[in-house]
Length: 334
Image (cartoon, rainbow, N blue to C red; front, side, top):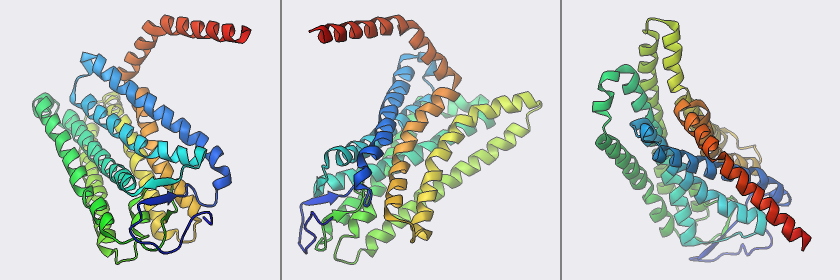
């Protein structure tokens, strides 16, 4: 931190992201799992999108929502991890104020969108299990598109005040953000003004989004469980319950790290700063990686299409790898 100017200034145009304060010497090692998670997230979510687009039998509400989740994961991880890895690898800590506000907006906006998509997926499971005969008439393509548009508008509208409020504050303390990305509160805390408006608004959004979304998901699954346990045989109950397993795991992977991070902010005042930052990074990096793995492993239709893809393309992949090996040997001989 001593390498940067921390004297008073006004209307800064550049901020400094420290990465993980206190663990600068270990940044290269810390980057390995985050880089791995990013690669898996990109490959996994692109694969999900490719398989759903390629297979007409998967063109249904559940898979449309899954594609929305995949797009959200791609944007969310790409908004955070490339800059984070640049800090870890190249000590590229500077970020333009406008770029910082843009990153902040995309992170929070797509986090809200992702929560909304999980609610939509819970609604899809509710209709499919509790009212299966009307599933195709309720969740038409038009209705799915309207739900998707509502999710996007909600996320974009609720988070829009974040950058506008952050831009109007005067920053005259320091331009150093002790974080790996431009987190909203971490940025506005640098302002030399009363930031209660930003603080209260962000708290209201967190309560509104997380509270209501978790409530709707809980209500949906209460009704789903009631419908499942009213089925005549245990085998039918387990089979029906299995169709919800992937979605339940995805919900837990998204909300549990967020809940843990919120509890740390509220009660973990004695916890080291670097641990707070690592948890915040994990919260944004792990769900985009885990979601395609969960759906790929636990959704039979996607898993079968994935196996078919590798079976049909396996010979070409083998020949391509053989060609690469031959080229490498030729280069070595030279």
